[in-house]
Length: 284
Image 1 (cartoon, one colour):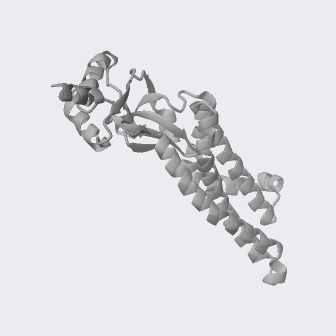
Image 2: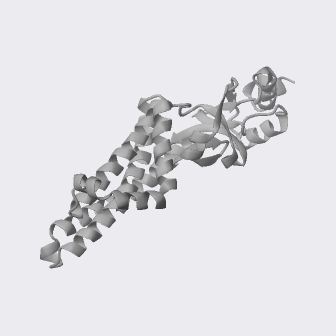
Image 3: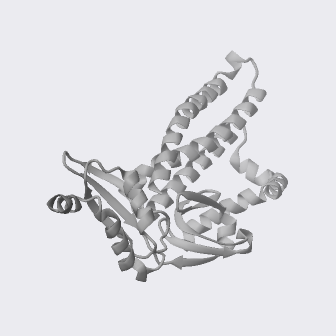
């Protein structure tokens, strides 16, 4: 989940580099419309449409770009909620600004646009339904970011299981191993949510010989581990020294009772590449 968030933040950063100048250019074109183009109404309408599109992209990318900083400073649940509120706030600001640019007063539009609102509501009922469902999920909080849950509903063609990665305006994202599953918020709201207790994971800090590659350790783990696990074991390079390399190995069993057995298998897998094993071979 952390890797996916960091990758999304990097993509959002470069998209913001392009979106912000486009937004500024649109504002300048609107302000100087009569001097530059010599017309008023067509430029107002065009600027309003462009500002809505750019505002949506800006809100999305600002939420993604701020996600790593929020996760570093807050717990996952609060960070997910703050990211949602940031996207929603910028989206509302962009919509109001577009209405002003188009020459429409939001109060007048609310009073005199009932028929238009009904037509748009019917045409975009799926989008509006997902948006409202997202607000309800944020308010009620049947789960929070970082929880492992199982959703059961007809709209899911059965059930899905994963870790809640983010709560979006239209979708809730679940991490299932290395994959991401985006489920519409109205489907999530109508589904039965089954919280799943995450079994205790095996977390090993291993000191191996400097000539050992992480791919070699991964192959040893795949060969030695027979216990059912949640996703593939992960290996992180923590430290490199002259005479050793420090690796952190994490693996989570499907059942909590399989933790000791999984720990034995992980230890057996890395035993052949540790300093102790090398010293025993030299002594023999």
